[in-house]
Length: 398
Image 1: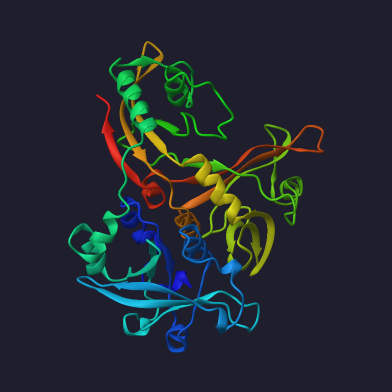
Image 2: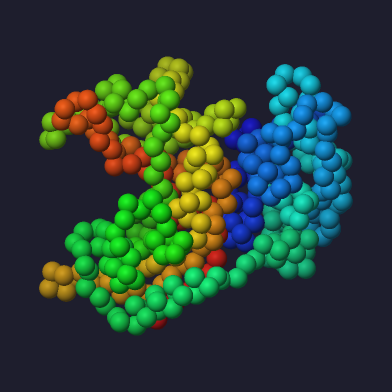
């Protein structure tokens, strides 16, 4: 239903992410407002569970097991106190539902609403109201006061890393220790005493490092890899079958391969795209033709959430000025953006809006019995990163 909302989640995510505010979106339909019933989407369920407000998985069906949570509807200049009922009906499969009392008095059909958990309570924000959203920058407004609760301080490890980055920056231009595009990251990690690894774990005592070259003319030329995650082994097809059925033969490499990008809002030249299967809490790589959709490879939402948090629980995004002197590249690391834990729920909204994509980089081995892949890469454009990860503080290193 979010694709019918008057405001897209991706249009307001930056605002909440910049304040480090967790938020789950929903869009009430006319039927929902008339019947006082809203389906609890995966993001709503996971947000309530993560912040210990309510766990639908452990809730029994029936009105006798309904739970009431103190809640607030956020207005531009006031908070409206109410309660939210959370329950699973006896009918069907007991699909999770919720309803903020008196909600119909403050909402219109197809408004985009955000659910914000705080201190055991639920706060509802109409994200289709520009004036209300603008009030977040006013510390005396209800939304502004709410935002202040989520502000955090820099950790001891982050302070230590920042000091080392400033020391490296003070050395000026440093010759690259590796040729090619990976030189900027490899050089920085070497200077910090970090050994090359498989990149499955954060780099510096739990903090991930991402180094890139300054490119003011083309700041979004390259997408940022968030993480790599292999699909489920019990997917409808095996990777070798996907290559054989939807890949292509490379005359140069003399092999069958599939190097392409999948997006949820459009088909690529192979007819492949991404599709969220919210009823099963899964993401699917699909093939679509003549209004027929075939599932190929699957990922669990929970597995993707864990991979994102594992890789980016805390990150320093380091910028370097690059120059070539007598055929040798040199780096001057001059800026670091310190980001906190990603807001996981936003990840799935960004996939739906086509702002997070998946790259397939795989080919069939010479023995034709196996597949070699370079990861199933989940990528985002740098200018959309602030919709997913709170880019809290920018430090000038020199």
